[in-house]
Length: 139
Image (tube, helix red, strand yellow):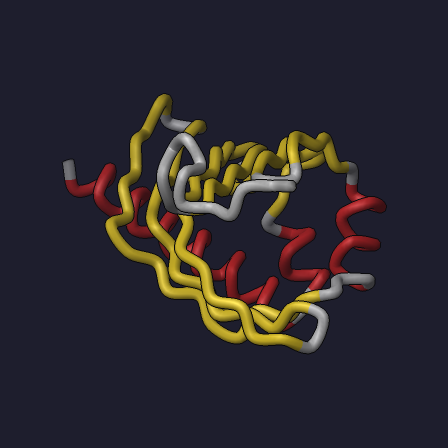
């Protein structure tokens, strides 16, 4: 039981390191925490991102993460080398020069190869009404 708790703690720390790398625009750190190709889903859709595309996205990002606070973190060990980390995140960003605050529910799938954990998939869902009734209707 203690070994499982240690691995779960390590995975939560890795998730926090990932956010810190994104916040700091530290492409090398983020690349080192990612298994490629990485699957990413969110409000913009679904993507399969290779190493070069990921590095380019970090370099050309039109937003800055000023703060990201994780809460209600859940970890599930699927196998000794596969884990799911899910949590709520409060984000304070600057997008195209303007402040943006959002709350989301995120989930990452981590795999361990050769003793190294890396994120193979990540999802982000903006918190709100699941039917979108809390968003402005399009014209």
